[in-house]
Structure formats: C-alpha cells, structure tokens
Image (tube, rainbow, N blue to C red; front, side, top):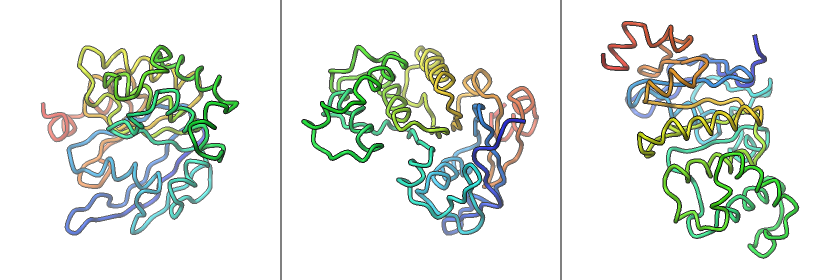
Length: 247
C-alpha cells in the first residue's frame, strides 16, 4: 500500500440543520487519483475546504504527512504541499497567463510584488515549462480573459503546479468545459500530474470521468462515506446507482 499523504479522522461539521460531515474517515494515498462523488449537498466540497484550511471542523482531525493541519490557515497548508483548484478558475483576468504564473511563483517564494519585478523572476523558465506541460504555452502573452474555459482550467492547474504541491485537490475540474473537450482536458491534466508526481483528489459528477481517471472512488451521502473502492466496484453498486447516479 502506498504511503498515506492526507488522513482525515472523525471529521464532523454542520451548518444549522445541515450535516456536511458526520464522522468522516478517509486516507489519501500517494500517487493515486481519488474521486469523490455524491449528490449535491452531500459534503464533498466541504471536505476539500476543511482539508485546505478554508473551514475548521467542529470535531476530528486532518493530518498531512503525519502533521496535524486541522487548525492551519490556507496559506500555511499550501506551503506544506497541498494545492487547490476551484470549480471556477481563480485567475487575474486582466493579466497575461505568464503574469498569472509569475504571481504564483512570487507567492511561493515570498518575493516582493509588482509586475515590473515579476518579469525578472528567475522562475520564468520554470513557469514556461509548466505552461508547456499542460498545453497552453501559446497563450502565455494573452490575458486570461481571452482564454476559452477549457484553457482557463488548464492554466489554473499550471498555477497550482507552480506551488510545487504533493497533493492537489480539485472541485469539478471539467465543470463548464464543452463535452467534446472534457476527455482532452482530463488527459492533459492527469498526464501532467503523473509527470510532476502529484497525487490528486477530485470532486466529479460525470461518471465517465470517474470511471476513466480515478484509481479509487469515495461516495459521499448525507455527510458520510457510503462506499469506497475501485470505480468498477463503486459504480456497480445498486445503492450507488440508485442514490447517486440515478439509474
């Protein structure tokens, strides 16, 4: 069994009468792509928010590489090696793609801000390599606003990789992307993660994406993990088919 990167134990949180996590226990193993599926409101994104410091659970702990990160701020967790890609790409739309990348590099290294200073950063060639890795090098000098949604998603992944994470958490990585482009986007994304040796957890509603790209699948339902296993095991489960997939 691969080493455990992230471990959640007895995570609990509720928002008023809504139970978003009710005793969640989950290990994320190094080198895997773990998919989280479940109906809307089941607590999937809440788990990502807790794991990255945007929410603090009311009970339970999250550890990363054996270190308790439950009460850490997002910036601290990022520096430890966990990056986040949101459902809507978090880009500076009026800056070029390369400027966005250099901002990420400056943030990681603690360099002073200012766009004139960014152009002189020694990480510029590394940022170009990452853009090439995800297939958007040709967009480097265009503003992020000009990019189609699929390319924005890929730039967002490149930004996350610029932080040099061990683990990347993604919320619906192909949301908003045309159906005809989803496989291409995910092929590029998963290949890039494998080359950079980055483990991933991704929330997904498209079962074709789950079946094709996940090594394991965790099913969330009413704040609990209903089932966890390989895509074949999980997607063939009659309860999962009825309650989650809608067959």
